[in-house]
Image (cartoon, rainbow, N blue to C red; front, top):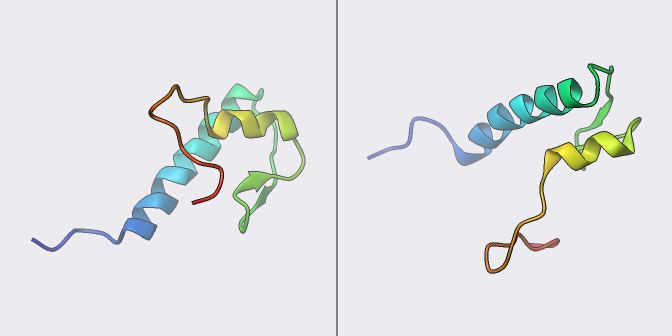
Length: 64
């Protein structure tokens, strides 16, 4: 079966939801995003809402 969307397209779609959630959790601030790093540039504490600390053995390496 052919997928209905490319995996990269799926990533961007879900990332938009993550950005909205992080903005809400950060107090509905206007946040600026660096598209290359996928990190907020004007609120470092809001970046913590983009991921979480995983427990071993289900970890995500810093570099893939």
